[in-house]
Amino acid sequence: MEYRDPKGKQTTCFANVAEKMGIDIVKAKEEAAKLGWEIPEEQLVKVVKKRGRPAKESGKGDEVVVKRKRGRKKKVSVMADQIADLVEAASQEVHATDEEKEAEVEEMKKKAAEAKDDAQLELVFTNFDKGFTTQTTCPIAKKPINPVCFSEKDGKKTFFCCGKCKAAFDKKSE
Image (cartoon, rainbow, N blue to C red; front, side, top):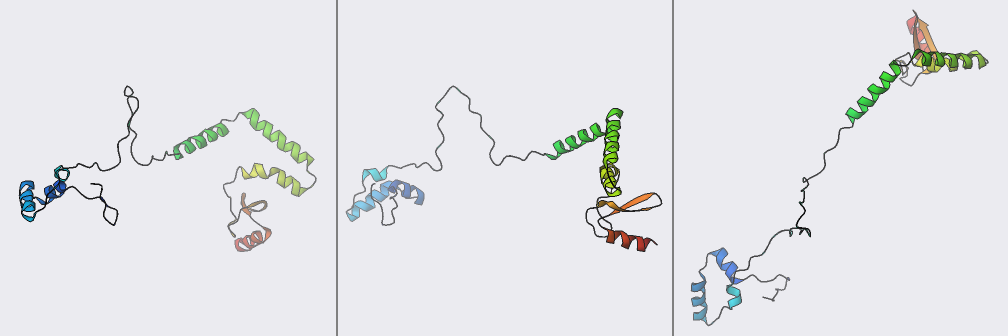
C-alpha cells in the first residue's frame, strides 16, 4: 500500500472499492483465481479513514472546557452610551447653579471692559449669543455663520456668513 500513482495519489484498498461498488469479495477472489491472479490479504482489509480536522486534545482532563460560540462577535451598540452621555451633559448644563451663571456673566463683563472697540466687543459676546441661537448656517450661502454679521428684524436676529449675504437678505426683505 506504499505505491503512489504518477499524480502522487495513494491507492485505495480493494475492500473499500468492492464495498462501494457492491462487489462480493469471495466472488472477486474466485474470478481472480480463474485469471491466475492473487489478491493480497492487505487489500481485503477495509481501511477507515478519518475526514476533517482532528479534534483538539485537552491536556487537563479535570478542567471543564467552555466552548465559545462560533462566528463573528456581535457589535455592541455604542449609541445608547452616547445618548446617555449627552443627556447627562445636558442635565448638568440645565442644573448649573446660579452662582456659576453669575460667574460666567461677570467674566463676560470683564472681557467687555478690556475690549477696545465695537468689533472686539462683538467677539467677546459671540459665545454668549451663539449659545442662545439655533441657527448654525447662513440662509443664503449655507456656510457656517459669523456672529458679527447679522440682521435684526422684529426683534429676531438672523445671522450670515458674510456682509454680501446680509446685503442680499436685506434687499429681499424690503
